[in-house]
Image (tube, rainbow, N blue to C red; front, top):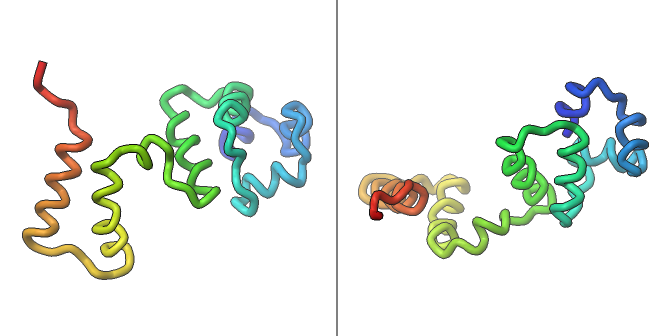
Length: 119
């Protein structure tokens, strides 16, 4: 949000005022001190105001979810993604995947998130 606000040539106070947000709270959002609102329509309203391109909106919604320490809803409802999370968690915690387990994990991700060729 901060990058978009600066690109729109708005001061923090001007931006917050035009969006009806307390400047202190807006600053905390930009600095990742406070979580983003849960209501996606508020984030969309802010994105519209700041001129965030539609191609970047999903990234913004993902960042909002992560600021609340939540998994984005489209991922949380994807059974394959949820099934892959324990392996991801182990890798993040330093128990790296190797060999066949790494190959299987990569293959599962490719299958889950590659366009299908079946018509």
